[in-house]
Length: 166
Image: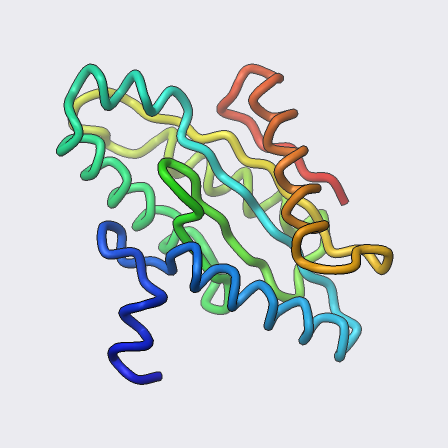
């Protein structure tokens, strides 16, 4: 991939894929999963109470926290998983060849990594919602909507939790 194209797909703050890169890769992975009849899961991740963190410690501290979360997510994922900044304080992880059980295991691992990290100012946690590609889903929007629904369930359960809809 050319440097300019790579730059256009990367979030400058965190170094992971940006929303555009995420959309491109998710579309590719859905096509691949259907072609080879393999599973595919998606995690959506929200930093709990991030606005309060930003308001208390400032935007520079918030930026550093987002960089640290992106790094923790990247380190906690497998080599072929795709981490992206979905927007603001939200991240996404595309999990090729992963079913519901694997998504639950990884979602919990990422949640614990963030919870146990050595936060310099104040502990942060994440809520994780995930979904698995189903045959009736017509496009990536259906998968995102189901993962988003799971994320809302995780937040409704008190945050710092992981909910997967298989």
